[in-house]
Amino acid sequence: MDVTPLSIEGSWLFTPILRPDDRGVFLESYKASVIEPVIGHAFSLQQMNISMSKRGTVRGVHFADVPPGQAKYVQCFAGRILDIVVDIRVGSPTFGQWDAIELDDQSRQGLYISEGLGHAFCALTDSVTVGYLCSEPYAPTREHGIHPLDADLALPWPGDDVVLSPKDAAAPALAEALATGMLPDYEQCVAYRASRS
Image (cartoon, rainbow, N blue to C red):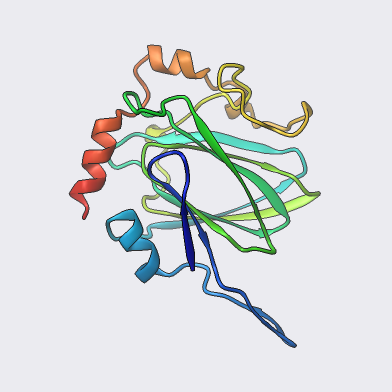
Protein backbone atom coordinates (compact mmCIF):
# COMPACT_ATOMS: atom_id res chain seq x y z
CA MET A 1 0.00 0.00 0.00
CA ASP A 2 1.48 3.34 -1.08
CA VAL A 3 1.09 6.43 1.11
CA THR A 4 0.87 10.02 -0.15
CA PRO A 5 0.54 12.93 2.30
CA LEU A 6 -1.80 15.66 1.08
CA SER A 7 -1.03 19.37 1.32
CA ILE A 8 -3.30 19.65 4.38
CA GLU A 9 -1.46 18.35 7.46
CA GLY A 10 -3.31 15.39 8.96
CA SER A 11 -4.59 13.90 5.70
CA TRP A 12 -3.13 11.07 3.63
CA LEU A 13 -4.04 9.11 0.51
CA PHE A 14 -3.53 5.34 0.65
CA THR A 15 -3.25 3.42 -2.62
CA PRO A 16 -3.67 -0.35 -2.32
CA ILE A 17 -2.00 -2.96 -4.47
CA LEU A 18 -4.59 -4.50 -6.79
CA ARG A 19 -4.23 -8.21 -7.51
CA PRO A 20 -6.39 -9.09 -10.54
CA ASP A 21 -6.93 -12.58 -11.88
CA ASP A 22 -9.56 -14.39 -13.90
CA ARG A 23 -11.96 -14.27 -10.93
CA GLY A 24 -11.79 -10.50 -10.41
CA VAL A 25 -9.60 -8.36 -8.14
CA PHE A 26 -8.31 -8.76 -4.58
CA LEU A 27 -6.92 -5.94 -2.45
CA GLU A 28 -6.28 -4.93 1.14
CA SER A 29 -8.45 -1.81 1.42
CA TYR A 30 -7.45 -1.00 5.01
CA LYS A 31 -4.33 -2.22 6.81
CA ALA A 32 -3.65 -1.02 10.35
CA SER A 33 0.03 -1.99 10.21
CA VAL A 34 0.50 0.49 7.33
CA ILE A 35 -1.93 3.22 8.31
CA GLU A 36 -1.36 3.55 12.05
CA PRO A 37 2.41 4.32 11.86
CA VAL A 38 1.59 7.05 9.33
CA ILE A 39 -1.14 8.71 11.42
CA GLY A 40 0.88 8.23 14.63
CA HIS A 41 -1.65 6.34 16.74
CA ALA A 42 -4.15 3.49 16.72
CA PHE A 43 -7.26 4.06 14.64
CA SER A 44 -10.12 3.13 16.94
CA LEU A 45 -12.97 2.04 14.70
CA GLN A 46 -16.30 2.95 16.32
CA GLN A 47 -18.67 3.21 13.38
CA MET A 48 -18.88 2.55 9.65
CA ASN A 49 -21.14 4.67 7.47
CA ILE A 50 -22.30 3.94 3.93
CA SER A 51 -23.83 6.64 1.76
CA MET A 52 -25.36 6.22 -1.67
CA SER A 53 -25.75 9.35 -3.77
CA LYS A 54 -26.87 10.39 -7.24
CA ARG A 55 -24.78 12.50 -9.62
CA GLY A 56 -24.29 16.09 -8.42
CA THR A 57 -24.97 15.36 -4.76
CA VAL A 58 -22.61 17.23 -2.42
CA ARG A 59 -22.27 16.06 1.16
CA GLY A 60 -20.42 18.32 3.58
CA VAL A 61 -18.40 20.24 4.59
CA HIS A 62 -18.74 18.29 7.87
CA PHE A 63 -16.63 18.26 11.05
CA ALA A 64 -16.95 17.44 14.74
CA ASP A 65 -15.85 19.14 17.97
CA VAL A 66 -12.34 18.25 19.17
CA PRO A 67 -11.96 16.47 21.48
CA PRO A 68 -12.82 13.83 20.52
CA GLY A 69 -13.54 14.86 16.92
CA GLN A 70 -14.07 12.17 14.33
CA ALA A 71 -11.28 10.86 12.12
CA LYS A 72 -12.42 9.16 8.90
CA TYR A 73 -11.04 6.69 6.41
CA VAL A 74 -13.07 7.23 3.22
CA GLN A 75 -13.36 4.96 0.17
CA CYS A 76 -15.56 4.95 -2.91
CA PHE A 77 -16.97 1.46 -3.42
CA ALA A 78 -19.02 2.19 -6.55
CA GLY A 79 -18.73 5.06 -9.04
CA ARG A 80 -16.48 8.09 -8.69
CA ILE A 81 -16.39 11.06 -6.30
CA LEU A 82 -14.48 14.28 -5.85
CA ASP A 83 -13.43 14.16 -2.20
CA ILE A 84 -12.29 17.36 -0.49
CA VAL A 85 -10.41 17.93 2.76
CA VAL A 86 -10.79 21.48 4.13
CA ASP A 87 -8.53 22.92 6.82
CA ILE A 88 -10.90 24.67 9.20
CA ARG A 89 -8.55 24.51 12.22
CA VAL A 90 -8.06 27.99 13.63
CA GLY A 91 -4.35 28.80 13.80
CA SER A 92 -3.31 26.23 11.20
CA PRO A 93 -0.74 27.38 8.61
CA THR A 94 -3.15 26.18 5.91
CA PHE A 95 -6.38 27.49 7.47
CA GLY A 96 -9.06 27.97 4.80
CA GLN A 97 -7.19 25.89 2.23
CA TRP A 98 -8.32 22.58 0.76
CA ASP A 99 -7.12 19.53 -1.11
CA ALA A 100 -9.25 17.64 -3.66
CA ILE A 101 -8.80 14.00 -4.67
CA GLU A 102 -10.87 11.81 -6.97
CA LEU A 103 -11.73 8.45 -5.40
CA ASP A 104 -13.27 5.66 -7.47
CA ASP A 105 -14.08 1.97 -7.70
CA GLN A 106 -11.07 1.29 -9.94
CA SER A 107 -8.06 2.51 -7.95
CA ARG A 108 -9.80 1.69 -4.63
CA GLN A 109 -7.80 4.38 -2.84
CA GLY A 110 -8.58 5.37 0.74
CA LEU A 111 -8.38 8.88 2.19
CA TYR A 112 -7.59 9.37 5.88
CA ILE A 113 -8.85 12.62 7.41
CA SER A 114 -7.73 13.55 10.93
CA GLU A 115 -9.86 14.99 13.70
CA GLY A 116 -10.67 18.68 13.24
CA LEU A 117 -10.54 18.74 9.45
CA GLY A 118 -13.58 19.43 7.30
CA HIS A 119 -14.73 16.81 4.80
CA ALA A 120 -16.99 16.96 1.76
CA PHE A 121 -17.50 15.09 -1.48
CA CYS A 122 -19.47 15.27 -4.72
CA ALA A 123 -20.88 12.34 -6.74
CA LEU A 124 -19.37 12.45 -10.24
CA THR A 125 -21.22 9.44 -11.68
CA ASP A 126 -24.91 8.59 -11.91
CA SER A 127 -24.69 6.75 -8.60
CA VAL A 128 -21.95 6.35 -6.03
CA THR A 129 -21.49 4.32 -2.88
CA VAL A 130 -19.08 5.71 -0.31
CA GLY A 131 -17.91 4.07 2.90
CA TYR A 132 -16.41 5.84 5.91
CA LEU A 133 -14.65 4.14 8.79
CA CYS A 134 -15.05 6.50 11.76
CA SER A 135 -13.04 6.85 14.98
CA GLU A 136 -16.09 8.05 16.94
CA PRO A 137 -19.81 7.38 16.64
CA TYR A 138 -22.13 10.04 15.26
CA ALA A 139 -22.99 12.58 17.95
CA PRO A 140 -25.50 15.20 16.74
CA THR A 141 -24.64 17.77 19.42
CA ARG A 142 -20.95 17.74 18.41
CA GLU A 143 -21.43 17.66 14.62
CA HIS A 144 -21.22 20.85 12.51
CA GLY A 145 -20.96 22.01 8.93
CA ILE A 146 -19.64 24.74 6.66
CA HIS A 147 -21.62 25.69 3.56
CA PRO A 148 -20.07 23.77 0.66
CA LEU A 149 -20.75 26.62 -1.78
CA ASP A 150 -19.03 29.26 0.37
CA ALA A 151 -17.56 31.67 -2.20
CA ASP A 152 -14.51 32.37 -0.03
CA LEU A 153 -13.61 28.67 0.08
CA ALA A 154 -14.24 28.31 -3.68
CA LEU A 155 -14.33 24.52 -3.59
CA PRO A 156 -13.93 23.03 -7.09
CA TRP A 157 -17.34 21.41 -7.51
CA PRO A 158 -18.04 20.32 -11.09
CA GLY A 159 -20.84 22.54 -12.39
CA ASP A 160 -23.36 24.71 -10.58
CA ASP A 161 -26.22 22.22 -10.38
CA VAL A 162 -25.44 20.54 -7.05
CA VAL A 163 -27.85 18.74 -4.73
CA LEU A 164 -27.59 19.66 -1.03
CA SER A 165 -29.42 18.47 2.05
CA PRO A 166 -31.43 21.16 3.87
CA LYS A 167 -28.90 20.98 6.71
CA ASP A 168 -25.90 21.57 4.43
CA ALA A 169 -27.74 24.34 2.56
CA ALA A 170 -28.34 26.14 5.88
CA ALA A 171 -24.75 25.76 7.15
CA PRO A 172 -22.75 28.94 7.81
CA ALA A 173 -19.90 30.22 5.66
CA LEU A 174 -16.38 29.70 7.01
CA ALA A 175 -16.06 33.34 8.11
CA GLU A 176 -19.35 33.14 10.02
CA ALA A 177 -18.34 29.88 11.70
CA LEU A 178 -15.03 31.47 12.67
CA ALA A 179 -16.77 34.52 14.14
CA THR A 180 -19.07 32.37 16.27
CA GLY A 181 -16.19 30.31 17.70
CA MET A 182 -17.45 26.94 16.45
CA LEU A 183 -14.29 25.91 14.57
CA PRO A 184 -11.65 23.55 16.00
CA ASP A 185 -8.36 24.95 17.27
CA TYR A 186 -5.26 23.72 15.42
CA GLU A 187 -3.02 23.36 18.48
CA GLN A 188 -5.75 21.53 20.35
CA CYS A 189 -6.22 19.12 17.44
CA VAL A 190 -2.50 18.40 17.23
CA ALA A 191 -2.26 17.92 21.00
CA TYR A 192 -5.26 15.58 21.02
CA ARG A 193 -3.74 13.43 18.28
CA ALA A 194 -0.40 13.34 20.12
CA SER A 195 -2.14 12.24 23.32
CA ARG A 196 -3.42 9.14 21.53
CA SER A 197 0.02 7.88 20.42
